[in-house]
Every structure is written in C-alpha cells, then in structure tokens.
Image: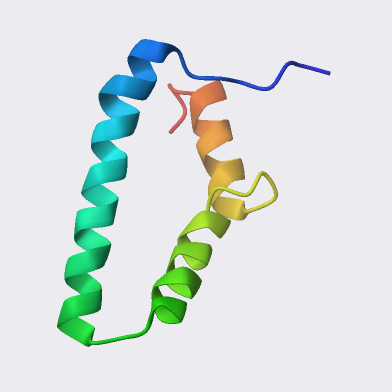
Length: 72
C-alpha cells in the first residue's frame, strides 16, 4: 500500500493557498448572485468533490491519461 500523498510547505503556501482563496471568493460571489443558502453551496461543492473520488469515471479517466499520455 502506498503512503498517502502530502503537499510540501511550499505547495501549501503557494498554489494550494492561492486556489483555496480563489474558490472561496468565487463561491461567495456565486452565493451573493444567487441569494442561495449555505446548504446549496455545500451541496454544490460535494458534487464537485465527487469528481475526484477514486471511484469516479472522471478520476479513472485522468489516471489513464497520466499513465498513457501518448494515447490520449
């Protein structure tokens, strides 16, 4: 069994922090525009999160693409 991947400190303070702030800003804007409750944003994020589940077809396709870059 492989060890769970962990980002470096540089990755945490760089791209991960930047993308996190971007997502939060965008979700705040979406919520203001739609005037929707937090529950909607929560469910919306869950739907996005599911695309990265190891069992999702999206995740499996990304893995195949990584393993066979010349084929796709």
